[in-house]
Length: 156
Image (tube, rainbow, N blue to C red; front, top):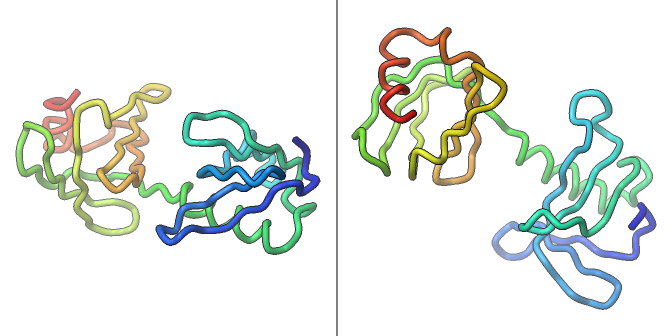
């Protein structure tokens, strides 16, 4: 599909973005930037929870204002990614466990459901997903202090 709006978007009572096609079928939608750094306002796919493309948006500024605002707010909430600077403590080395971490946005707690919620990115970066779906970035696990590395190594 192109940016012609033969679809509608709205939020349901749970705050999820819902895509309605021209036939009236509805599905949860997630916007995904094709080029998040080089061209953040160009090439955005609306995909279902399984990653199947529902619509393609060439440019955000070509969308009607109401749709553009919905897509921009969803992108902003999905792209919130605090950076873990230190792992202060964990409740247990078995999962699920509660982690107390210091991030670039302050101290917080996250719940790690399982070791599979720690994903390896381009070395030495890691992505940690908490039970609420918030993604935490560890830019360089080797740059963490010794205490943090020791805790992290127990989960990797």
